[in-house]
Length: 185
Image 1 (cartoon, rainbow, N blue to C red):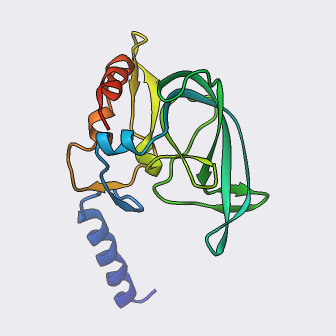
Image 2 (cartoon, rainbow, N blue to C red; image 1 turned 30 degrees about the vertical axis):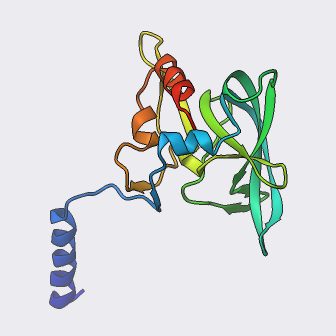
């Protein structure tokens, strides 16, 4: 390695070390208001994904991988009662050794309880409303208090700083339930 290459390498290393590390997201979306999220949803459920499978489907004029998740419904926060399970489609997934990532789409992790906003397409398929903005995994504090968290796949949100993701994230499950039920679409 000659002197010029060594100096160039050291300069690149110094520049890298002096740059501030920043969090980046793969996509950007407009923040959806809680009222809009509720009004666009046919059902809102406290549910747990029990199993899932992926396959190819034609969406529009292209072939895509989609994932279907079977959700056990613990409680419907909004929508017709009596439903104990739902089959929900999300975009992306893995079929054999091929995978497709859809940035900003909800990722329903198996055995992870969540609050999920669902809408039914014109083809009769249940999907998460507003992609990751309609999915809130539940975590438990050390005292057992369950709280909503933002979906891991949430994109960078622009627009209304008091959108649904900001309003719901961090709330106790009981507080979120009351807030969601109080929304008049």
